[in-house]
Image 1 (cartoon, one colour):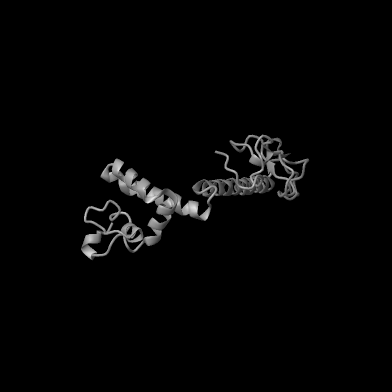
Image 2 (cartoon, helix red, strand yellow; image 1 turned 90 degrees about the vertical axis):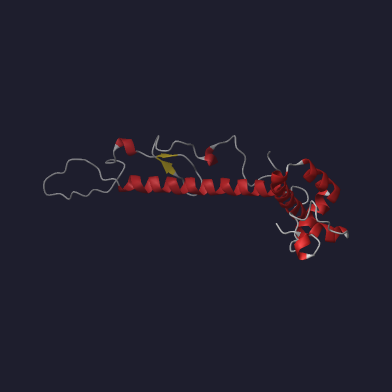
Length: 185
């Protein structure tokens, strides 16, 4: 928040609009001369007159947040004229969904590997080794695995071990890579 009167330099808004920056300029605290692109984007998307009206209607303590929101939306709209920040939000939501699928797959692998490492509690005959590899015959019934997917060689889950279902088995949800960017909001 710089004041244009102390530096004797007009704020970015007054400089772009080619007008004299007065001491009470509503733009000066939010559009310093060091950040001209911030006002250029806001002016291009919203217009200086609309921004002036908006700032005048707000209380002084709300103006900085409003300008930051306008600047963010304007920059997003310049980068993506069709979707703006909704496009960025959609991209991030899809990335979260993809990473959640990867995490679920890793958790399923951990459960599968953990089930293979659990020793059995079957009685041993004297003179035999206490180690028995887990085979379908000597596996404890509570650790029987069931196949819950068919992607990537199949993922296994101990029945009732996870409090959620795997999203790639949900037939009602669409593929996160279909559609080409339309927002689902």
